[in-house]
Image 1: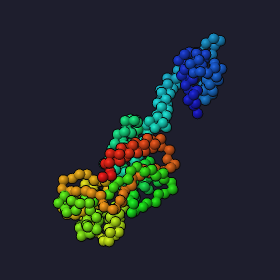
Image 2: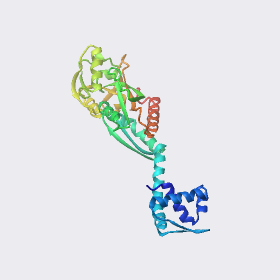
Image 3: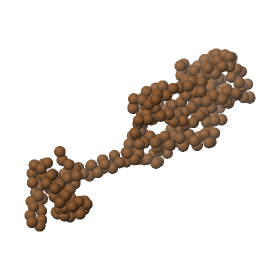
Length: 305
């Protein structure tokens, strides 16, 4: 097998026409250069230089190898540079999974920050609910995922995962603007006769609503279901029901009014999770960007009305 160190030495000897000058440029002794060339000749099975008392003459094989070898060494140098950049987190690929409301409100600013700091990094984004992305993190198909957990629907995290808190967000009751509850802070029991708009049955958001209402002494009458909070809010604006939405999913919409529950400080908690054993150097920078965006969001009271 050809040794790239020996190849680099041969290219330098051909270029300078001297073992001594090649040694000086490469930081070797003349003896070391001579030994490397001899090892190269044994590897290829042909004499590469005609040695005379005070000079050397490259054979045709040496000229051919040096010509092609220069191209290979340039490619190898580029590859080596890419590997170093990847190890330092300047390049490479990061695969992130996230849920829709974080995709809209948190991830874009974090990715913009990451791209500004590490323009050579490639980020791939997949969108799904926590129950769908967690197995992908565990299997290594995703490097990092944004997930959430409600106070009333606690999660247990696999031991293989590192779980980092990003933000806590309020849960807001949304009612049509003309609704009587829009004039006051509402109690959940005041809405026991209302039609509710909830997320898909079995989701943690729907379960949280059911448990909240049970604690208030009633079962919510679910009239419509959607995992798209824009759809949920549009239904509220149309006057066909009320809803409980996390602050990340809330957007001011004409015809609606949003307020926190009185005496019910229930929140949704957003986390970043990754396999503890994952050595992707981009992980640290991505987590730092997400945490900074979330700190600024909370400081600006965007998610805690």
